[in-house]
Amino acid sequence: MKFGEKLKEKRKSLKVTQAQLAADANIEISQISRIERGVLNTSIGTTYILAEALKIHVSELFIEL
Image (cartoon, rainbow, N blue to C red):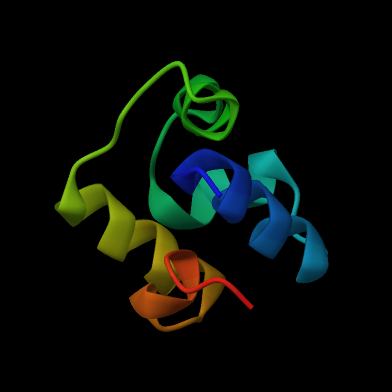
């Protein structure tokens, strides 16, 4: 599974909107959208910020369940 798809899946399972995630991570909502659609690759630093905003361990964004 691609990273963006995993992020979207995890975000939705936690019932967090893109707008909420963007606000919590201090990232533009358009960037969240582009990451989830696979249009934009993200840095490891941003990955950690997203995980922190979702209150999950960063590994949850990479591990297939």
